[in-house]
Image 1 (tube, helix red, strand yellow):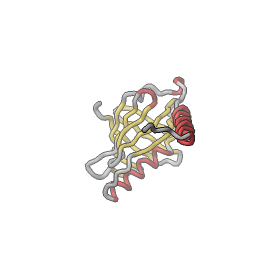
Image 2 (image 1 turned 180 degrees about the vertical axis):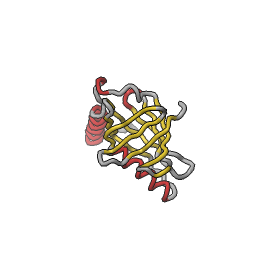
Image 3 (image 1 turned 135 degrees about the vertical axis):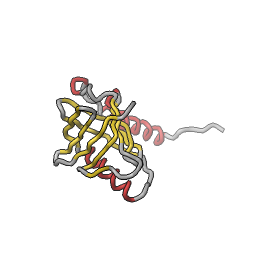
Image 4 (image 1 turned 90 degrees about the horizontal axis):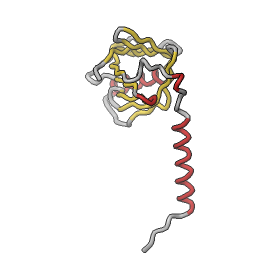
Length: 146
């Protein structure tokens, strides 16, 4: 018996492919806007909004090539894209897996991601990175081995 794909299914698949391609294209910053000092660096969070990180699973971020951002919020995997230039940083398309952890770890992860979603500037020096939101909330990181 030969299976056929309905016209509605084909149209829906084409539309979905177009939406995905458009979303991906909208996140690609210009090469001139890239802060190359962040490419290939890996960071472990030490504090969020001035409060020391709790628990054994520390939030982490890695800045990869092609504007890719990856890491962990302490419970879930974190991913997105970044654009950074002249000490300003924009983290977009942030997402995370949907694993549930204990309430304190989830609250810490939410605070971590809230700062990243509103990230406005960064300061890097002497093995440290601080990402700050427009309202002053921040995450402080220490450099991690690759």
